[in-house]
Length: 429
Image 1 (tube, rainbow, N blue to C red):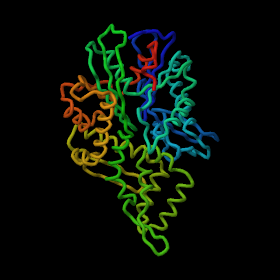
Image 2: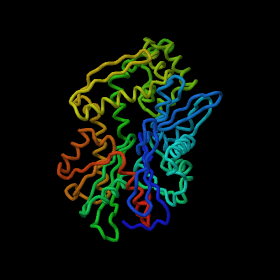
Image 3: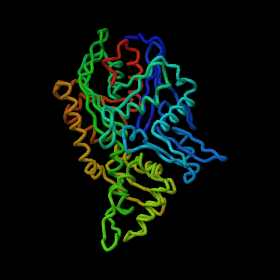
Image 4: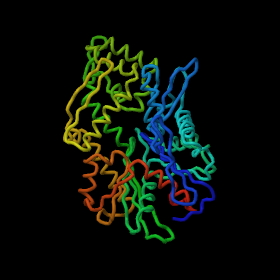
């Protein structure tokens, strides 16, 4: 890899679930250790927690946000997966303790807090900053131009130059750094909000260009969508899904929008506002059975979203290594204990797996590469650990071609490597 950047390069993988930073100063990048309540770790949760403290509103990020939330959930506003709304025109702001916060505000607060916990490593002094971005942003009809404007507002202060690179390309560059074999590689990056794919040709060490990107594709389906499937099957029927309400002399089904909002981690965090709670109170009065709506209101008012998120995440993790798992959640008048089989979970996410495979097809087509011409498939990101995801690639490309590793840090590592290239035009998104 060439090393021509005159100053330090910061590679930043700002993820829906986690954020990781790496810095290169003329050699192989080093992951930035970030301070947490239990020690230092390069993986920093992409979360914020706001609370009122002595007449003002305090805020923390990452694992510190989780710690503050766990100490006093009802007095907190816990925000997670907020990257999901980056490309959404319908998201204008979130009201938190009577103050409006745009996406840009939330992002700048998060970056400032991450910098404070980096021990001075992420201090705005980098010569180049390479920020990862999904191939396709999450959400319905995502607005790429709006997302870019919002990203610019969030990351502009981190360095002299800020560039954006598709996240799977970062993983591809990291993979190339650790291999001496020329190959055509399909990189599959499974995050919280999106699944992204890049096809890259890797040359032997010493080549003028070690990596040449050939094609890309992405889809706004990943770990958070799988969570929604679990919630839809196990939780939503107890919160009123499928129930009815009375309107004049008619009995109508409760609108599905309430449940889609609740099952979206980014939107659930913002449902705790006076307007939404007033509308839910009105729905409760009109509901044929008001008890499930009471439960939904209680989960929102008692700020139980993170606990619900953890319960769902635990089931997913358990099902990655076992055929059955137990889902357990209690709070807000809601108590659920259910056995979940891996087979049932795979049925629930079956439509999502189809769309993911279609995105793989688009990536290969855009690269002009057939499946048989792919020498290696590099899987990265948390959801790459789900057995049916891995099986999809093993079936199509053969198990001997599958590689994985550094599921949470390879993108940041590769982004910092890319930042040392003289010409970024082949990489910038």
